[in-house]
Amino acid sequence: MLADLGEYASHCPDEVESAAQFTLFLRSDPAVFERSHLAGHFTGSAWLVGEDDTRVLLMHHRKLDRWLQPGGHADGDADLARVALREAQEETGMAGLQVEPGIFDIDRHRIPARANEPEHWHYDVRYVVRAGEDDRFVINEESQALAWRTVAGVAHDVSFDSSLRRMARKWLLRR
Image 1 (cartoon, rainbow, N blue to C red):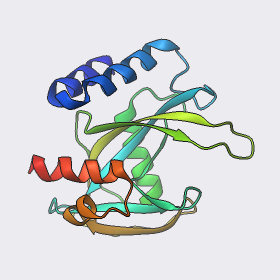
Image 2 (image 1 turned 60 degrees about the horizontal axis):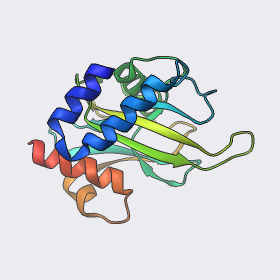
Image 3 (image 1 turned 30 degrees about the horizontal axis):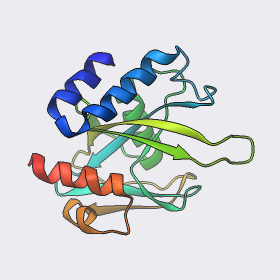
Image 4 (image 1 turned 135 degrees about the vertical axis):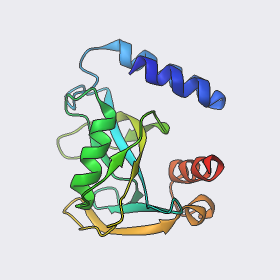
């Protein structure tokens, strides 16, 4: 993970400070991949693109009531690419997904307190996950809806979370 964050920083010079913050957090405690690490923990997310590279699958998160990329808690798994793939499969019901090597994006964000959970930080590491020919999905209990959106549309729609728009802009520049 340290090497991946270093590689990410070298490819995204405007995010060197964020990558350094993630590196410090990674080195801070062996429990940073556990949900029980109450100050914050690592999560893995998927920038889930369609076979044609022009669409991204987003979920309308039930608890947070907003459109987000599929993803979730590491629950002790330090391989965040594997976490991103697992979460994409679980949250979309899609088969045949493939994760690309290397970090696509990172985002540190505050999670509000809920019933038995204090406010805390998510250190979200995002990976490109590709759908195959069959891009049908199944909505699960974590989402109110799933929808394919054009990447260009996400990049310019201010109703989307700023990190989604950033990933969309990155994706468009990558092509």
